[in-house]
Length: 226
Image 1 (cartoon, helix red, strand yellow):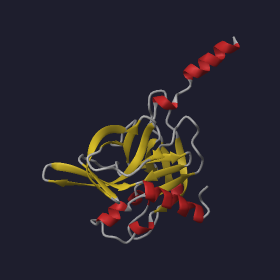
Image 2 (cartoon, one colour):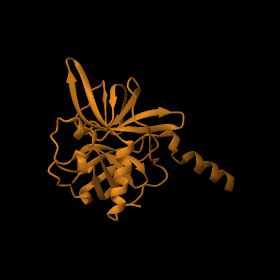
Image 3 (cartoon, one colour):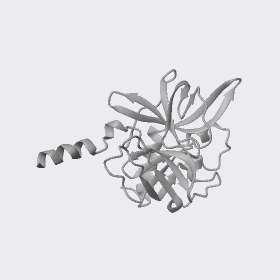
Image 4 (cartoon, one colour):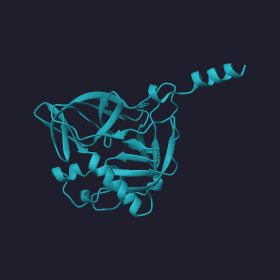
């Protein structure tokens, strides 16, 4: 009987491998949806800088932000409040059109409590390469139940910005640009904004590797990280 219970519990438990992108979630502000974010540690969410602050340097109150994980089959959604945040300091005070501001449009939200082992954080990978086929996973629309996923080609990739040949819309700011590997997906960039050249839609994304490390260091420096 004991073995039957053990086997049943293993079959019933949601498996991380069955929902590798459950850590791609929605950020809500005072109950309203607005951006996408990705879990990169049990209590850290990477997103776009403009999702958590204004260009004039005023940050949103992290306590009013909530992160909702993706609702994959067999994977119930989890909602956790924010506790602290850091926005890349080079993002503030720049004009919206410059490559510099897009490349630094990135932020880190520390959650009030770590998510349990049923939601796997995604690791940070090397920057995108020109011509590479990558995936964008993002929340889109008010009634989205899980992140939508599609592949895009990096038409240009020069530190600190990757330009991808696909369309992004409202709610997709902060979405991770992912490289799929045998060891699982890894985050290479964070969606910042959109544009177009003729009929070609474009998505602009900030490289994640260096900025994520800098933001972690800033959270630790102010006593909000671990």
